[in-house]
Amino acid sequence: MTSKQDDSLPSAIKPETLTPELLEQLLQNQAKELELRYNELSLKKQEDNNCFEFAKAALSAKTSDRKDERENDLQLQKTRLIFASVITLVITTLIIYALSIGKDNFAMELIKAVIFILSGGVGGFAIGKSSHKDVSKEKKSRNREDME
Picture 1 (cartoon, helix red, strand yellow):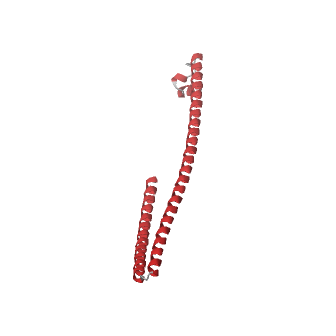
Picture 2: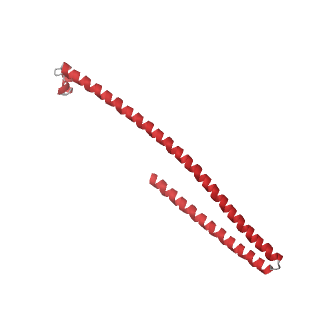
Picture 3: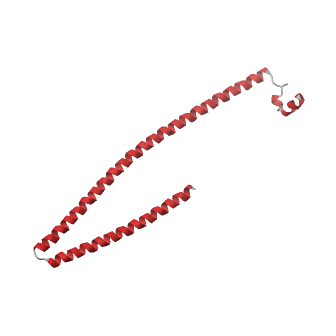
């Protein structure tokens, strides 16, 4: 049974060739390997900590960026609303003034022009919005395909 075990071991590790110096060298190598493994684990832990800190910083930056974006969108929406209100006020004032001085035909033509402009604007907006949705759906489907 011992001869069978001796045949299965490599020649460098056979009991006859194991000297105290070789055993000492093997133990030193194993100690160095353990130390290297400990260092690798420490580096891996440090890398994970660095990734975590970077992710926190990126999330914080994204949060402040989204806040700024929301504030900008709100300001833009307010500006558009004020512009539309001023235009509506000017047109309404023109119509009332035209009616007060007896220019009924001018007031009717102005109302017709406003209706045509508004209907064209609403139609164009609807077409643009629907084509924007189609483009967004296409981009999302392409992104999904790329991920797979």
